[in-house]
Length: 212
Image 1 (cartoon, rainbow, N blue to C red):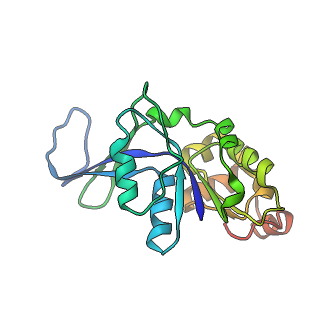
Image 2: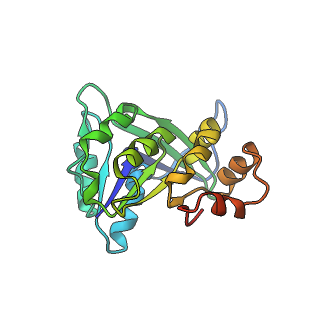
Image 3: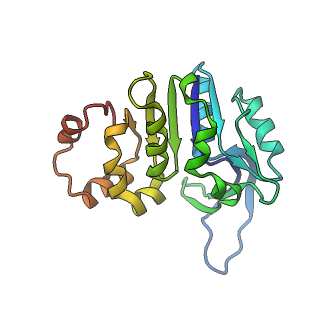
């Protein structure tokens, strides 16, 4: 089984003809509420490919629907922590006819997902652990638990916010990763801020790393 660690959100998808403008008013062509968050999206993709995946993260007092929806998508949700004093994370996404997106994110209960909570997990029962949109310190905590001795692979999708803020720290944990997942924009920023001119040297220096 796979384990995916990270944000669990309500995604509010608002489809419009044109993008929003300051002090403007536009009408929605369609409106959809769905479970989201990059950790959930990873888990759903794994199940669609025929695998099994469990999500670990935090939802708020309104999180029952999210847990139910993930189970409907065949995602294992038994490790999700419900926090009564917070609301779940929410992302409002406005999508125009050209596919341009405007996103507004509210972290909510996701803020309470801390590296020390990893200690509650039995990581040795998983074949692969994925961390998404969380700080590099999560990778350090996980690797401290599994190392190389348990034959468990480890992937990391930091996301744009973390790449901008902790690009140097990401470089420092590459020796612990099997897979680093970034889009073109994120990877361009990552190699620029770390003064990387020859990408092939990353694989020779970090021999555990199989894919970027």
